[in-house]
Image 1 (cartoon, rainbow, N blue to C red):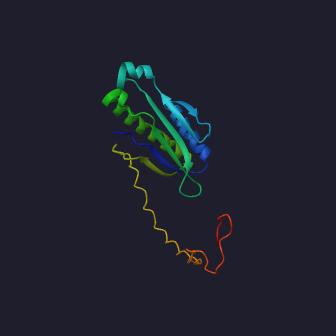
Image 2: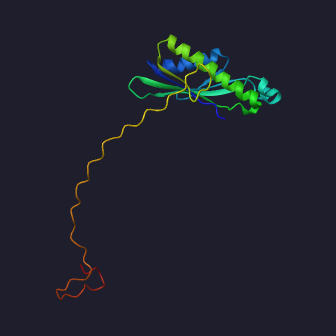
Image 3: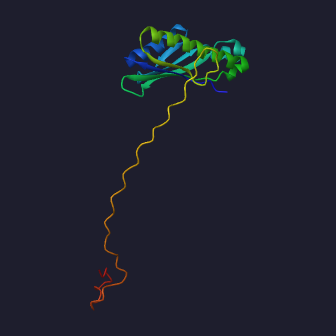
Amino acid sequence: MAIEPIIFTAVGDPAAVVAIAGQQLANLGYTITLGADRWSGEAEVGSKVGRVLAGGFVRRMKVTYAVTQGYTDGQWVLTISPGMSGMGGGALGVSKSKKEMTSIYESVAEALARHGHVAAPQGIQGSSVEGQPAVPPAPPIESAPPFPPAPPIESAPPFPTAPPTDGQAPPAGGGNPW
């Protein structure tokens, strides 16, 4: 059972959107590593050893986040994806991971709204968490008009199947008689 990503459609300065996402994750206790492209990052909280020793009783989560071009000019898509399933902590770990993603959603949504960057908070994809909107399905792709028919191909003269019959012998050396 996979934990779905969080998706926001944002407006305004994309650098501010990625900075807000990173700052909110840091406020939640995550260690942030900004990507080399400066439009993405990774955030991690908790200890691998602690998770191994105490299972789902230890807070452990890794997420990646990225800002990409939106569907229209001036829109940006912020995606926060879980880097872990929570399975290492058993059923308790999965439950805690889902709650952690909900906490991230609430924190980032509030901050983006406060700074005027939210065009459409889309929620957690496939969300079954009460009070969290599920991401609506993608709009249908409008059918494009068909391509115009190709112009007719000019016919080439037929390829000869036999040497000319004008009485001349083929060139010496067996070359091409045509």
